[in-house]
Structures are given as structure tokens and as C-alpha cells.
Length: 116
Length: 115
Image 1 (cartoon, chains in turn cyan, orange):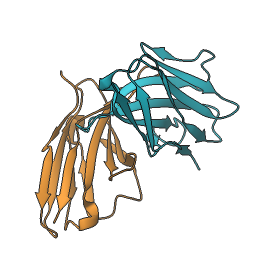
Image 2 (cartoon, each protein chain N blue to C red; image 1 turned 90 degrees about the vertical axis):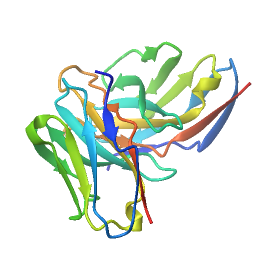
Image 3 (tube, each protein chain N blue to C red; image 1 turned 120 degrees about the horizontal axis):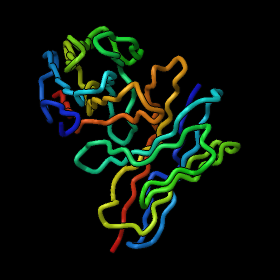
Image 4 (tube, rainbow over the protein chains, first blue to last red; image 1 turned 30 degrees about the vertical axis):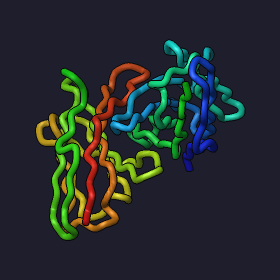
């Protein structure tokens, strides 16, 4: 069965520092996609970054980068130069194109608090 | 187009009443998803539409739940005879079937409270 595990219920980081949010996944599929979403208190899920299973380079989107280690089945999110506005819930998700109609399977999330 | 729109944002209802939520996806997106999110958890998949066809339903979607997407545009999610366990955030998302990334864009959700 496909599963996403986020082992950090909460993380703290000082403003302007970098922080890594952990994500491991379990799948027997060869083709899959990994996503990170941010959910502020307003409730909307905001797309941050995507990594395809066949992508050889780690994905980057501005201050966000994804540390993809396929053999270890991990897809950690790195946020550089943290800002107060980064305080939110962060969810790792996996998409299975085959047999899953592209639905997302989410982890339980990590709450990030950025301190001034 | 400003994104995925969901209405209402909040709904309080008495146990046993029926409720209906609406989702307006991004206009060029042919895929539409409903998810449910309970407190402290990640969203869980409920159902998926491609255009007007409902192609997948989760086992979470009991027979009290029904979803429609007439003409492949907006979608509605109805819950009949609500129970306290239905209290949750209901999220709608849409995506395009073209492009490798095809990320899903989410609405702000409808928070349902059953009293």
C-alpha cells in the first residue's frame, strides 16, 4: 500500500535560518510524483514543489528545494532563509498515475513555526 | 480566473440535516477532486471527476455522500443525514491532464461543523 510518513509533528526555526522537513514514502510503483504543499491557517493548500520519480536533478523553486533520495524513498523539503510567513502546516504527498487516477496521498503534516 | 473557489467557507448544521457544498474549479482544468481533512491530519481522497464522469470513489464516501459535476464544470458534494463524525474541512482541487507535473490547485475549503 502507498503511504507517506512525516515523522516531525512540529518544527521550530529562527528567522533567516534554513530548515529541513522530513518525508518518507512507500510505493512499489516505478513512476510516481512527489509534492509538497503549504497550508496556512486560512486552510488553502498551496503548491510548493514537485519531484518526478525519474527526475535526476533535485527540484528547486525559489527558496524551496527537495532533497530526493530515491533509494531511501525520502523526499525532504528544505526551506532556505526562513521568513515569518513560512509559519504553517506542510504536507508531503505522493501521486500514483497508474490505477490511482492521479489522486494525492498525503502525510500527516509538519507544523513549522518561524521565530523572529 | 483567480483559482479554485469553494462555497460556503463555513457551515454549521444540526445532526440529521442535509448539506451541499459547491466547488468551481479553474476553468481550463478537466480534473476535479474532493478531499476531506480532519483536525491534525492530512487530506484524504474522497472522489475524482474527469470532465463530467466520476471515475473513482473512496471507501470513505459512504452512501450518505454524493458528488456531481454536471457538464464538467462546477461540482457539488452533498451529505445527507449528517453525523457528528462528518465534521471536517472539505477541500476541492482541480488539475489539468496535460503536462508532467499537473499539480493540483486547491480551494480554501468548506469547514463543516455538525452539532
